[in-house]
Image (cartoon, one colour):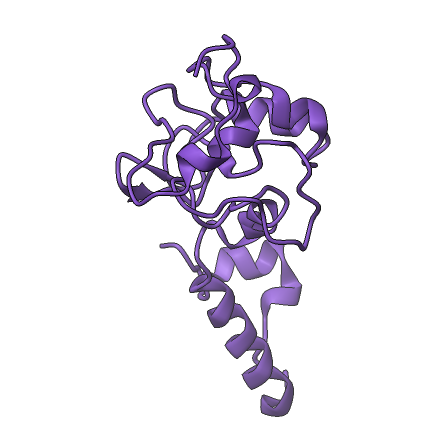
Length: 165
């Protein structure tokens, strides 16, 4: 069970503080409601703060699928980290110029280009230079495109790691 709220007699013997039979209901009810609420938190709730630390962190997609766990190999928390996740960790979970200029997935586009910060000027709390055509910086099969417009105007030869257009 994901949320074990009932304990056996042997468990109470090992951990006597779990015996709540003499606890007043005015204390017990709020405590149980708090525990129950914790059971329904999304598994990735603790990592949403990382999305805010990169430009467009809440808009990253891969193959048209929303990818909330940007630094992980699967779209949900619990899988191993992808190359962008390792780089983000090495950068102290901060958006740095070095992280922005790097091409974590080796697809020829900088992390900044993929996340809408082609000039590496984004600052936490501000709007990124671009918020359309966001691709995943951790997978080489996720590339920025010009679908929907906005990408070509912010593309420069320095945005590609290989110097190409």
